[in-house]
Image (cartoon, rainbow, N blue to C red; front, side, top):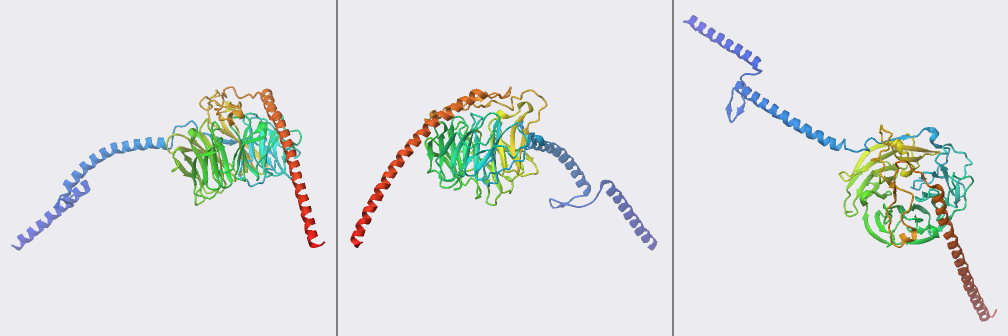
Length: 534
């Protein structure tokens, strides 16, 4: 009985071991066999669960592959829209010219004024330089590169430092300058450049009571110049008559940082130390629209018109981060876009090309030039690239489209002022073909004015007269020079004589009044002496 019992228990142990062995084999084959999970409150055998999970996993993987493929395609499409945005200017790159094509050994002005300090046209490059006993700027033909001799003549008629210069868009030999001596002077540069120092200006415009920091020519009207001074006054001059026609002296409560014309010159845009930007109709003298604090920081703001009447501003945040913003004047409450760039302290100077809708941002003290494309789709201001170099810039000149080399696909050229050097920087769109690229060079504004000064002051506007750059630009030197020379000299002489006559008459009246006053004082003194018994 005991043996049978022992035998039975032994058999049961053996049977249990066999079952355990089989379970272990099944677990190794199926990864698991009998584990229990809770599903709807009941225990399930692992084999059934594994089968169901494998079926569900296959279905899930098949569905996930399709879904992941769709998501992947959507992400690729979205990334292609964001990162690989279609633009012919995506690959624009900047490159400095070779050393022998720079202008060396020039003492650039050390003034801390936030102007460009450089102006360029298809004939000349002008740079504000250091001068003793007054202010001066140097004018060089574009071809006169290399080391500049110390005896190179300058334009040195101002009695105070020169703060701003600007070439006339309708005559490549006429340049305006504003100075700390409160005057604006118009200079006529001879063909081939200066051969001796120039001290006598063609016209001297006096009307500001403090230094003149901004001068800018009208884009379409002939012989119309705007000047702005630290007296918070804007004066628009008829240069041919040497007369101030429009004076805006009540619109700004503090120093004016920048002034810019719109495309056809019917409006001006100003930024001011009172943290306001204003769109002004200069002939009516009223403010069309204004925006308070376009940027929260206290540093200077720059503002320019861009395409479709929109406004681009550069400024600083409360944390002194540099910003660029785009505004719609019809909805000034919020910017279309506002982007933070970096934390540098230099004021960003914007240069806009209306033909390509590219804006270039150059900061004083920076060593880089950022450029953006402005479009009608968000975020409206699209970053393209940045040119960087080792040396920081003291100023920047911007060449008009008429002076570019179109056969090299050059879309912009800057003249970067260093401590003792001017370095041209060329912006190029890489193209393999040498054929004229019509998509890069639409018709651009030419040198011919579309309206005369008197007509513009009377209320007439004129769109820029466009020219094609297909065969390059060949200026009509003699004809253009003679026409502008006659307009600049004859009326000025007449106006100057009239003003001298007026000054003499007023002086005579002043002397008569002083004599009468002296006689009255003598009589009074005698009466007092008699009363005192003297």
